[in-house]
Image 1 (cartoon, rainbow, N blue to C red):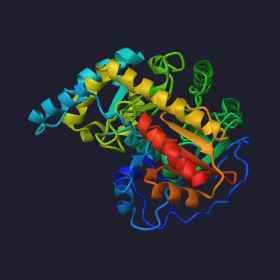
Image 2: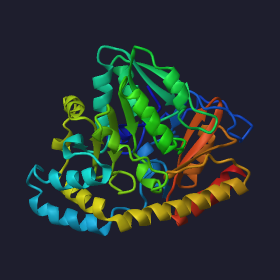
Image 3: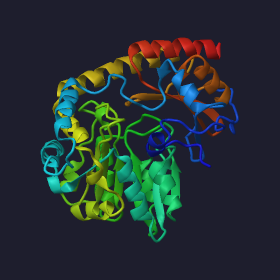
Image 4: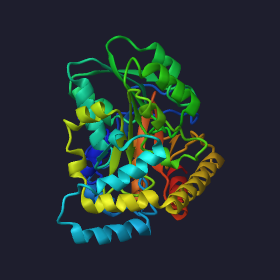
Length: 390
């Protein structure tokens, strides 16, 4: 059984793995510096040695799922409440206004957009579609493994290139690794769990060169945390007809993790192919859709969430650095850094202090991935971290 928790698994298990997955398979390392390229063969671990639901109920600080601690905007709340009046109806024409808003911002046509309950359904559909008949999915690791793990279950093979020494997707290496059997190139930007980003110009150049030969899937779940200067605007490539698939979610900066809303941008034929494997728009509730439409227009709330996230992230990064830990620079709402304890011991002690985090292991080096909460929550995290590491 895999110990990795995907977004879909999180929903299915209410955020929890079954008891017993806290048994560590990891080898601790003395060094705290992440000075080697991260490679394939890592694990994501929740440390639950007894009843996981009881563990979660005792958490004081929940920093393990990259949720928006500020919640949804007031405008979204108002829209959801109003939409309950038509909650007996399926959403049909109501998709139009949101698709129009997205198309205007991203430079695509409404026909290039497919709405879904979160982006997990899009990942699942792509996994099944591109894995049929075998073939290879090309990516870098470590990254978000939901699509990748599912493609192997559907019969595909994963070819994973190590990240660069600065923990980014290695675009030149990916380009060199393309062979006739590669059916999809999968890129997560910003990357999870490293929090790193690619140069917009380099990513665009890569897509322009590769997409005419092999489809490129861009998982952009965390893109809304980027400043405008750092954000690649690649909808224009879709508009130009290139075989690009962009997956987005409202679960992060919009705070819709429990409401479930996302979308894909791609060529109409590709969206039609993906739609064969999922309910997609038919699975989006009208209340969520109306809330999402309001949230998408609430730029002030998005800016506020982005700013507060950056403040808390910068505070945490500085605090960890002052404690002698080298933090991978993050552009997201989570931070990855190496720790000096076995992952199970670290996780159990953090949970004992009421602080929920995730741990991973790369190249025999244990890491902590902590979500960015409010400033108060990150202060509690640092206080608890000091107690645990001594």
